[in-house]
Length: 127
Image (cartoon, rainbow, N blue to C red; front, top):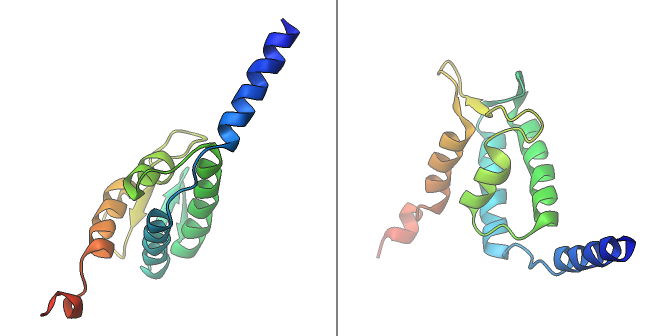
């Protein structure tokens, strides 16, 4: 039994160690999205407390590193789903509140902002 546990642990350790890193394109997109959150002036609700965009960015970057340690992030949407939409501690959905507007689910806000990040700039769209 002990040998089986050691063998299982060794195989699991090898599999975790061979996970491919997140692509540089996806990583750059995630960082651009979190920079938008930081600069937005919006607040981020996590487990019942409101935090600044800067604090939210720091928290979500730590979660990104944690999730990357478990495996590859396939896309920015994958990151949002796994790490930026709810607390892994309480299971409560994160929220974003901008100015006097009602809070929205962070997943909704981040997907909307992702569309902005991905949109071609007006100067690049011109012939």
